[in-house]
Structures are given as C-alpha cells and as structure tokens.
Length: 173
Image 1: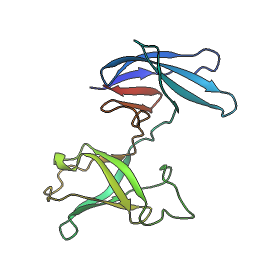
Image 2: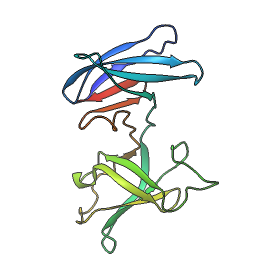
Image 3: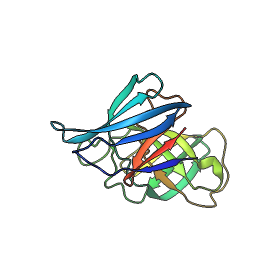
Image 4: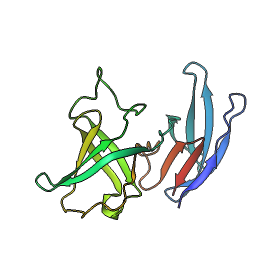
C-alpha cells in the first residue's frame, strides 16, 4: 500500500517528511541546491539521527500507452511497441534510440496479470522493446500501460521504494 505525500516546493524553508523505509522510521529533508538549481532529498534515520543517503529529486514520467504487445514463442519473450516514445527519458544517441539499449520498465494494469511487473527490457528501436518471459502468458485480454518508475532509494533500501511523480512522493514500506 503506497503512502502519497504531496510536496510543496520551497527554496526558502527546508520541508521535512516523516516516512518508514525498510521498517525503520526515517525523515527526509528536501533542500534546494543553489549551484545545481534543483532539489535534493536527504534521508536520515530517526533513531540514530544518522545520514542514510542524499540524491537529487527525480520525477518519474507519466505512463505511456502501448500500440501492441505480443508473446513470441520462438524467442520466449514479449515484444511491445510504444504508441509515442516522445518525452520518454531514454538516452538517445542521435535521431533514434540505439538497438540493444537496456531500460527497466514496469508494466501495469494488464490482463492476464503475468504481463504486470518490473522487467529489464532491450530496445530494438525507439518504438519497440522486448523482455524475456519463459512461459506463454496466454492471450492478452486488457492492454495496460508501461511506466519508467525511478526509485530514488533503490541503492540503499531492500524493500522500500521512494518515487516522485505528479507533485507527490509515493512511499512503499
């Protein structure tokens, strides 16, 4: 169950948010960096007042629609094609995404549920990506959406996630 915490930006005061990450009570101080011209989140353990991590505040982009999703039984993988890849935060080396670029995508709201989850995907081109799926998930009943969810605490937390999108933090303990 996600906890949604709205964030009202301020470069005058330092907003503080109390959260639980990996079962520990923590607090987040959100500071404005004058030279970088951006916000940073600083996470501290409440019990020890010890610093855990400082990372830039990175917003996850909105989810994207897919034009098609199909299972390829010969490759034992799913092949998906985006409706429109514009404004997607994928490094581009010229006019197109290079073949072979690996990106972590989260697929949500698909039926059957086998399609849902976080997958390490390989781009075939700027519109098409693929990921392995050893068993055939069956026919697609409901087409979901693809997300590029950027977890700011992935490097230090085992189970918790901290995601910023739509002007709010989403915390999953």
